[in-house]
Amino acid sequence: MLAVPSAPSPGRIAQTLKRLLPGGAGGRSSPKGAEPAGGIRLRRFAGPSAFVGQMEPLRIAHLTDLHVGRVTPMRVQRAAVQKTNAERPDLVVITGDFVCHSQFFLDELEEVVRSFEAPVIGVLGNHDHWSGAREVARAIERAGALLLTNEHTTITLRHQRLQVVGLDDAYTGHADREAAVKGLRRDLPTLGLSHIAEEADALWTCGVPLVLSGHTHAGQVTLAKLHEITLGKLVGHKYVHGLYGTRKANPLSKGAVYVGAGIGAAVIPLRLGERGQREITMFELGQEPGSFDEHHEEQAPLPGRKPSERVKAKRAARVLEKQRKREGR
Ligand SMILES: [Fe+2]
Image 1 (cartoon, rainbow, N blue to C red):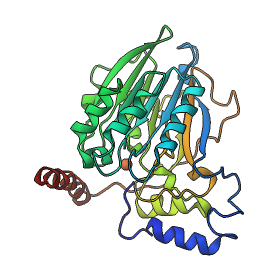
Image 2: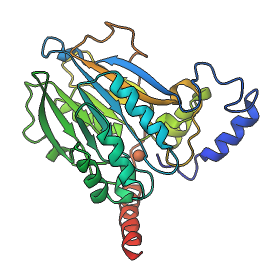
Image 3: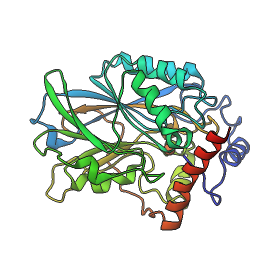
Image 4: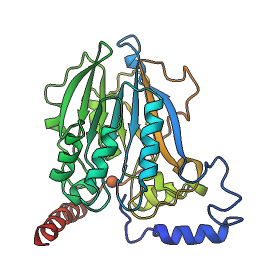
């Protein structure tokens, strides 16, 4: 997640909350529904109704924003892997920001990715590009995972075929939807992966009814809907955390997108509010939406605001600037 100059910094938010919360942030009177420090929420949703009858049920574990590095202890990463494996998913998908700000922890990243017992498919995020996409990709592939960079693949899990489309990171200008969906089959159940959730709108029209995303960390602080104010109003995200759109089959080429709260952090690990906790999400593809107790229903998107051409150019330049700095060292 990137803070914009006009948005309150995580440090300022933390200080304010420490003053406001009885007992202090993270103190004895922790927010309703919060788990102990380092706790990871497990959420569960059904897949799109279009998949019901089209496929044998599959369980997909979605993790995002691992941010393996200094800010997120390895015990958290290992706990995330353990919790995921305990659910015995058929596939693990990770939607970008594998690292934090550097390549110093690529061996640890490799260890984490390798520890998942199910096959792993991932896409890159802005932090991966800032830190060196090529090196991050190599670490992921050394761990035995498949990285999708503006492409799609069809895998067979328990005799069930699943098409997976993966976009490269849109924040830094690396997403190429046309390339990613070229040759996509409409007769197979298809899952989309994109670090940036707003890419889902266009993927839906290409026959991808469910897109899994990350990047926002759910704002990390969701008390008093602070995350919707900072990430929605100030940063301009339409999709901040959780499920949006529709999983019902409809003729309007609409679909659903899920924004995971992530596992790690890039700045400070503070997470307050039930929706802001570290999170692993299980998607039960082939099951009807609402057929079991889900965490929440589809939400309406926020108004959102597309980045200007100037902002996009600035973001792309930042990747090159970081690359030059790395090469100059
Ligand atoms: Fe990100």
